[in-house]
Image (cartoon, rainbow, N blue to C red; front, side):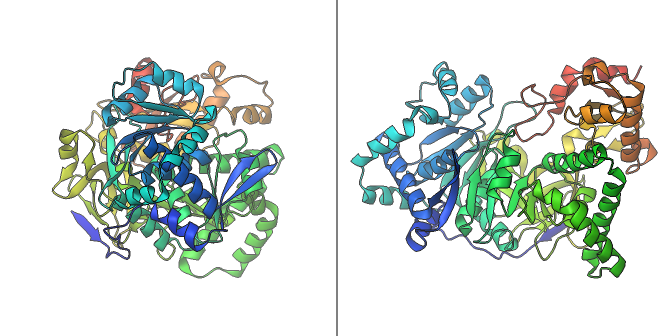
Amino acid sequence: MRELSVPPRVVVADDARLTDMVVDNAREVPDLVSFGRPGPDGWIDVTAARFATEVGDLARGLMASGIERGDRIGLMASTRYEWTLLDYAILAAGAVVVPIYETSSTEQVEWILADSGAVAVVVESPVHAAAVKSLDLPLLRHLWTIDSGSLDVLAAAGSEVSPAELEARRTSVAADDLATIVYTSGTTGKPKGCALTHRNVLFDVMVGIDGLRQVFERTGSTLLFLPLAHIFGRVISIGAVLVRARLGHTADVRTLPADLKSFKPSFVLAVPRVFEKVYNGARQQAAAGGKERIFDAAERTAVAWSRALGTGRIPIGLRVRHAVFERLVYGRIREGLGGSCRHAISGGAPLGERLGHFFRGVGITVYEGYGLTETSAGACLNLEEDIRVGTVGRPVPGVSVRIADDGEILLRGPNVFPGYWNNPAATAEVFDGDWFRTGDLGELDADGYLTVTGRKKDLIVTAAGKNVAPAVLEDRLRAHPLIGQCLVVGDRQPYVGCLVTIDPEALPAWLAAHGRPAAPASALTEDPDLRAAVQEAVDQANKAVSRAESIRRFRILPVDFTEAGGELTPSLKVKRSEVLRRYADEVAALYI
C-alpha cells in the first residue's frame, strides 16, 4: 500500500460561499468585462456589475416565487451564458442547483427531479418544457423556460423582494451547506446524486487556481464548450469568475471553430477525445495536402522538445528544428484553438503521454488531472511547477491519495463529498473510514505522481487468469486518426479481442487518399485495406502490453458510438455494459 499526503495551501473560511465572488467582483471591479455573450455581430461584453445585477434580479425572482433556503432546483440547458447566470442566482437565493444534461432521456429527467425532490426546474426550450410537463412530479411547483422569455418574467417578479432581503438570504448560507447535487451520468444503472457543499467546490476551485496561476490569470479568458452539467466544466467556470478572467460559452460544435477564432481564449478545457480530434484533424489535413512527412517530422520534434523541457536542457539542433516547424506547422495548430491559446486542462479520462508531449511541444501545455464528481472534479493535477507528462500529477495540496493492496485509488480531502443524496447504502459502499474508494486503479511513482490504469470493474481476467486493464490499449487505439471508439473485451476468454468503430470524419479523407470512392463504414467492415489500417493501429497499441495482454482479433462495427445512440455518456465515456449488450453477437464472433 502506497500513500501520499500534500500539506494544504488554501483554506476555505467557514462563512464562505460560492456567491461571494459575484458580489466582490461587482463591488471592487464593476466595469471589468467578465463575460462575452454571443450576439448577431460578435461577442457582447457583460461587466461584473451587470452580471451581479442580473444574478440578483433572478435570485429575488426565485424568492418571490416561494423558493426557500435549501430547496432543490433543476437546471437543464446547454452550455450558454444563462446557465452560469442561473447557477449563481439559485445559489444566491439559498437554494441547491441540480444540473441535468439537456440531452438526458425523459426517464433520466424524471428520476433526477424526483430523487432530488426538486420543487422547480429551469429548462432551455419548449421541447424540454413539454417533456417535463408529461412527467409525474408531484413536488414540482415551477417550470421556467429560457427560450420562452421566462427569465425576464422571473426577474420582474423579483421587484417584490428588497436587495436587503436577498443579501440576508444569501449570507445565511455557510461553507458546509449543500450547494449542488450533481447526478453522475453513469455508465451503468441509475445516476446517483453527488451532494457537494460550498466548501467542497470552493476548495477545489481555489487549489486549482493556486497551482495554475499562469492559466487562471486576470487577463486570461476561456471559452466553455463542455456541458456545464458536468462538474469539470462548472468548476472551471467558477474559477474564471473568481480570478476575474473573461468567460464565454458555446454549445454548437458546428460553430466551435469560428467561435474559438473570434473569442481567442487564452486557455481551454476539454476531455482527451477533443485533443485527439485536434491532433487527428491536423494530421489528416497535412496528409491531404501531401505534407504527411513534414507533419510526422514536426510531431517527432514537438515530442522531443517537450521531453527536453523536462530536463531543462534543449540542444541547439532541436531548437533550430523546432523554430522551423513553429512557422510551418505549430502556429496553424494553435490557430485551430483560436490562436491565443497557450494552456489547456484535460480531465475525464487519461490523455496519454504521446499527446501530452505533442501539445506541449506545439506550444499548448496541457495540464492533465484526475478526479470524479464525488471529489468536486480535481483531486490530482499536474501543477505548473510539478508537471510530469503522462501522469495525472500529484495530489493537490490538502488532498491525500492511497493505493490499496488491490490497486484501487483512495482519496481524502476537503473536496470529497459527504455522500450520495438520499442513498446512505451507496454512500457506505464507497467509504472506507474517511477514505473515498474511487473504483479506479492506479499507481503512485516514487515522486508521488499518479498514473490511472483503468476502472476496477472494467478489469478483464482472461481464461488463463491474466489481468488486463482495457484503458491502456483503448487509449492508444483511439490515438489513431481512423479510430473513432473502441472497446477491449476478453473476460473469461482465451485471449483479448476488441470492437472498433471508424471515425466518420476521418473516413472520407482516408478513402480519397487511397483512391477509393466515398462509402460509409457500414459498407467497409470487412474491407481488406481498412482492416489492414486498423491492424496497424492494433499493432501499435499492443506494443504497450505483454503478449498475454495483447489484442489478437478485432471486429469493425458499422457505426460509431454516440451519445444519441446510447453508447456514450454526455462526458464521452463509453457505456461498456450497453455496448456489450448491443453488440453481443460481434463479441461472440471474436471467439469462434
